[in-house]
Image (cartoon, rainbow, N blue to C red; front, side):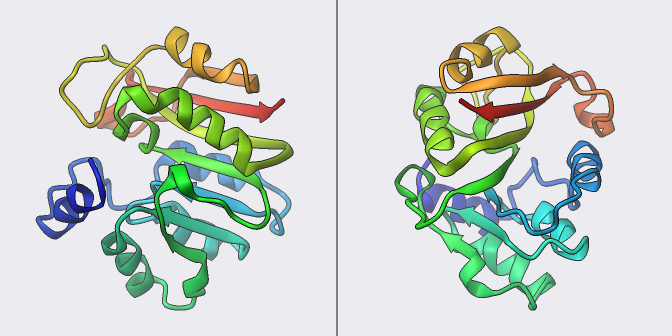
Length: 193
């Protein structure tokens, strides 16, 4: 699942995870954020509907990170006013920004990665956040199998990866998932230790 794998998915329009808009749980979370100056990253951003939503809500210090240029180009077509230097085509695991983020939003990225990368994901997320920074978003909860992406998992498994690096503020069944994902998502807020 490298750059070519994901680029081909976008070129073939084989993007079953793409709902065509920011998901309801993330929109509602974004809507309660008061400080529009915070620095926000969305890794594995895909078509980055959450970036578009943030931009239209007045957040300007926002960054989309994806391993493929295809979805970032799609975002740039929809929102040409977003600065190109905030659309980052890089590998998440080698991404090393000059400054840290206040908030990182998770939307389908974690569960798109091979499960063998989950511990490295947690370590990298902690490294990318400022002291007291937050990682928030959605994780799928369905049995973990070898067929994917997406790859499932359980709250207990996720806590094993995140607890060494984050204080868990919230990790609960999502009450406002979109219909096809209803009952299959956890909403979480983690704070960097």
